[in-house]
Image 1 (cartoon, rainbow, N blue to C red):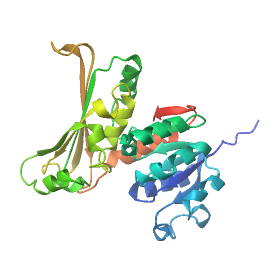
Image 2: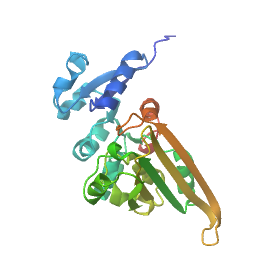
Image 3: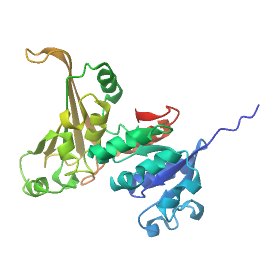
Image 4: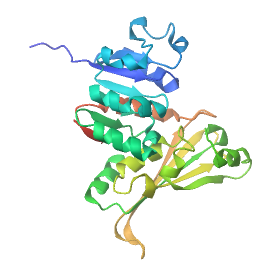
Length: 280
């Protein structure tokens, strides 16, 4: 009997800091291999990615026969290629804020009939337990609060202008539905999008997101997850749980340090769950 490990072929879409990290880790391993690496500009990959692995036209992805395609580029990738990816491979969405678009979420769920659509948990703590509560219909409410230094945000619209005024005290930039926040901060609130997908009985409209700009957080990103389960919320006699995650982060970085290893674990675990949507 052969002892040769079966190697999964993984395609990486995006070669920013996270994409570079994933490519380096894949190259170190024997249980996975690079099917391809695509980036908006190929110059960034020169001398770093094997020439044979560079994919210059993303529409040619199917010829590389990847088992799993991992997006770490931009939410627009899922808009343009998500259903096509799922027709040929499992697909892991590194920018799940894209799914705040109801039409796209529906399209990807419909396409995930032969392969799996995987959502990385990232900095979202307790996702599996929350999904179980959502499956049983016992999850009544969920709120995710993210706190970062003002320089760590990539924003648009009114909250971008508000963030520019933050100097001394912490300021709440947004407090409302996750669906409303995702288009304003698509690079910052993937954790909230993952929460809305795990809490599927509530979804993007009913999961609450709060974004806080805090000048005092030079070395940390803080994520608070608060939920309410069975019982009477009105009389404060419902099940309640709150977790606080302090993620070390380089000053000004959009992504916390611990998120890299968490994302790698998610990528390695994104297989063998069959069709449908899976948190990983």
